[in-house]
Image 1 (tube, helix red, strand yellow):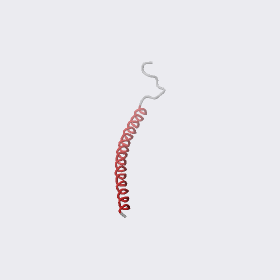
Image 2: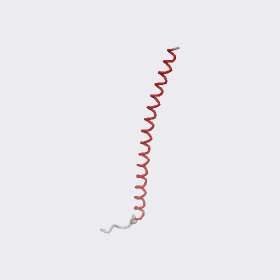
Image 3: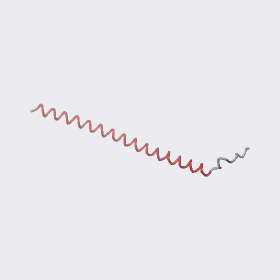
Image 4: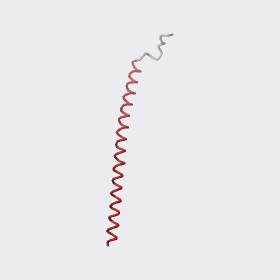
Length: 67
């Protein structure tokens, strides 16, 4: 019986360590996803601004002033 109890305690300790490792990994991934979401939002804003600038610019078939 003591061997069974020791085996269960070892398994419990292993599972607790495993859960702690998964929690740390999940936290790191969550931070990375948040950073990537912010980066994507900035990129989308930049692309939208560039698209609106391109629409208000001179027509594509207009000759440049130096011609």
